[in-house]
Image (cartoon, rainbow, N blue to C red; front, side):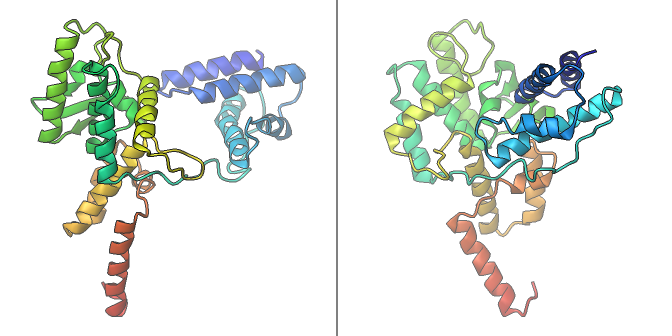
Length: 312
């Protein structure tokens, strides 16, 4: 059995276990093709895999390490099926990810974004309200933009005030409670959407005037338009503010509110972790950004700690 056949079988089996393997699948198939082009009977070596990883389009060390890391579970699979005795080492090329600082929106910026969303074309159409409601949902719940645009009508329960998030990252399904005010806005949107599209042929909660479901590409395009309209164009490490940064903003706002209310942060963060759909609390800490308000609180707490001789 050649490597391309094994690669396809590996991808199929992993997806049957619930893994999406989107970009990973493309990489693995690309590597299998690279291997076949080299020589069908060529030994599978670390050097050969490193050679392929080094072909990363950006050429950055992070991208090369990430491509190499994608091959490691594949090498384990090949080893288990007797194709090779090689299993790639972990962290061979260093870290495969880095944290680029997210953009944390102020309350004033969020208000401007939602106002600009209301001014999208077509005036008076469903699209402006769809994008405005999407932004409001993201900042009030912290769910991922992809999760929001995939919401189906039967997953938005405005009687119990909960969302059912299906096929979430790391989970088959999770329940997300929403506030009364958020449920009220979603209810207003639903009435307007029913008026515009009486026949909901897509089943999607968010739709446009042409009865097409909202998708992440159209959401990102609309956000680009309103970002430019509001002048929200500051870049961090060359990256413009994103819809996804509303999730980071939500987390920072939650932590800030808990500190102000003198809540038990450790307990609250554990609860927030499950709410966000994280399986490890460390993934939630990844979202907490050193904004001035949080740094000020941290400085005050350290000063009190220091004044007490290092006793809390």
